[in-house]
Length: 295
Image 1 (cartoon, rainbow, N blue to C red):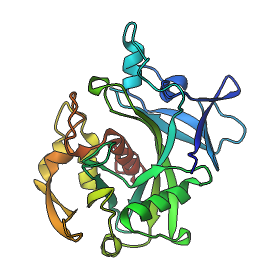
Image 2 (image 1 turned 90 degrees about the vertical axis):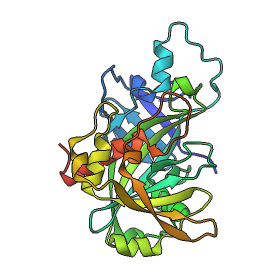
Image 3 (image 1 turned 30 degrees about the vertical axis):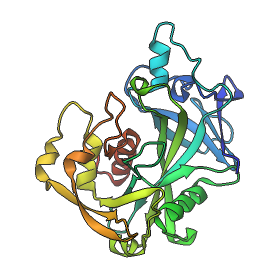
């Protein structure tokens, strides 16, 4: 199926975004850490963004990119060559679901080691938004495809959290980017408890190798990791968390996951170490802000 389109409203005109262009940069992002804010219109088949309000804009959302964004690095590199980047593609739109249980924990999944994009990385369930999909429709489809969870629309509520500009490889030091996404994080609030949801999860072994639930205390520590210091709250946590891992026979088994694994940052050299993605940490901060737990 065809993927959803990303369009920017620049100087009053709708323009598509080329693969080689930084979305945040086109929207006027400076050199600071962000996040910035963008007005957006969400319709079937397209996501329209603008730094200014426009007719039809229904949301104003935070948008951010990592400080090591390869497209920024290319712009800053004197005589930087883009000849190895695709010129016939745009920026893909993705949706990632922050699924919140009734007892205020959220679900993260570990991508399998065989995936071509971000293997072994912890992320929320998500994927490409198709041309004929609404945001929540896409998120719930991906949740069912990856985790076997079918959540009726009438039994959940939805909050749009923010946008993250993502590239893979994530750093220019890893090589030129081959994938360029704008990810919309959507909070889906379930009426079921973590225990009820856990009992219904059937992970897709082609995409997911493990899953876990984070409460606000652990999420605060993970979201605060910036690679320069260990959050003080780390001292209040146990050294490992309880996760669930897929076994070779298709069953599952408990996994004691070291908290230190979740605090790793994106390495400067190309290595697929298990960690939480930078975009997921951004989404966790937005979730905590929604709960009123982030300062």
